[in-house]
Image 1 (cartoon, rainbow, N blue to C red):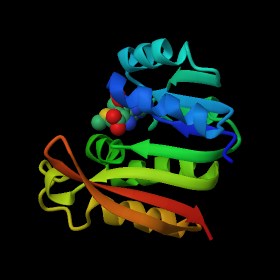
Image 2 (cartoon, helix red, strand yellow):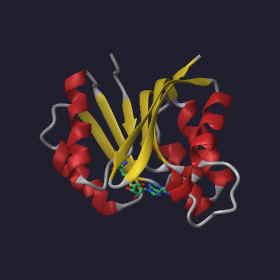
Image 3 (cartoon, rainbow, N blue to C red):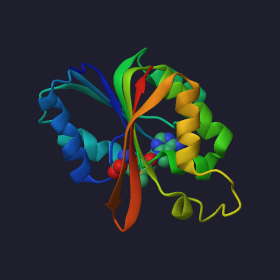
Length: 168
Ligand SMILES: C[S@@+](CC[C@H](N)C(=O)[O-])C[C@H]1O[C@@H](n2cnc3c(N)ncnc32)[C@H](O)[C@@H]1O
């Protein structure tokens, strides 16, 4: 059973509540990071009633120094939900790949990502050749993970794809 979990806190209380269910699955530590203060405050409020060792840090995922000093050496599970496209759109593919590699390097077991479809994600970059999903899989397989599960779901009128990566 997972003992350490890293995840992004959600900007929506409902999703954070879902995250707190993780404690019931046997997790002993939960680490949420985001650069949006309001999301962190909501996450803290929700987790205050959860019997779990947790912490939330305000960190820019694309700031190497901030990310390195905030992260623990390893996590059993890393969740990167509906955020990879934001990194690509705001900071470019090279930085998004680098951030993903930093998170993956600290993941010892499962890396779970929820990624939007390429057409919508690439609205502002229609000429880009690769999709965020393809980029995600390329980076993860390049650092020693393989796709164990993949499933499309509709969320808020968009199609998102769940990826569960496991180490080879
Ligand atoms: C679409 S929301 C997804 C939130 C949650 N994971 C969910 O699935 O409901 C994207 C999140 O990424 C965060 N984010 C975007 N850029 C970031 C960055 N550079 N560093 C840290 N967090 C960032 C936003 O603040 C926001 O909470």
